[in-house]
Image (cartoon, rainbow, N blue to C red):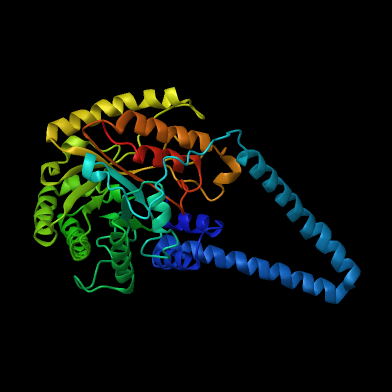
Length: 427
């Protein structure tokens, strides 16, 4: 889902903040797709103005009686019918027969993490968009759910798959206002003993970062230099804040394939700046064996959105069965490189199709057509942890995401599932 679609989708969410809308607005208005989108919005506003002006003229020329009749039959009645239809669709799609009994026993009632990572080395992680932005999410509610690692997600941007450079940092180690907010958030998390995974993300106005492509070597080199400068900036941030884990890249398949030597050199350069652990976040459908720098990192990082079922509203057994092929592949990969596998992202939407294509974002009008299913989301997490959590080669997960997302688990049964498994020690 591109930034533009996420922006318009977020407008209609009760939890969205003005700061977040403004941040997303700035990020998309500077690219062509965003430019077109906001001109379209301007056109809609202009059409509303024309309608308003039309009825004002009717009132002035034909009087209040004709004005009210036309207003009722030509405007209010069609709008009322549309509202009724939308409300009916929302009612049907958002009603679910799933009576979940919340388990409060497994929750952490103290003010600090139990630090189970020291015992079994598992990352009990969560992606939290708010930190470094609005900070609406409290550390207390994360600790309550046995979350010990938080993923901090700075975004940087390029216009499209063929943009020859990223809107990169002007000067390394010179912190912007946004950078300073991330630094403060990391310090606040550390104050509660919560560990931090700093995972900078490249976002695009259109296209997908895995498909970045150029016809000339010069363009590849220009792009990589701008990426290098940006990622070194965040490596400096990771070192300054003593973030425990740093991700050198996310889903950059085409660059990794085309520029392997540059990536190895970049890793060595990062190591001269940052003393913590390193990973790279490969997409679930990448050819992991062609990534030849795993041995330079501490974890094999994977965005774990593997397809698990072909049917909607699956049973737990069906989802578990869907993990078997992926599980065997991941075990072989770990053994080959003698590195543990870490899910740098994994998440499931609360809808009936969540396990068919877990990587898909919802559309702006998705709630009108998709059947809500907290049960499917819950069972997906139960199957994930039931199959992988106790495997010695599996290093843990970062859930996408706590809130402000189509994948949100906060307040849903999936939250309680994650809390339960995060309270579980590997035996």
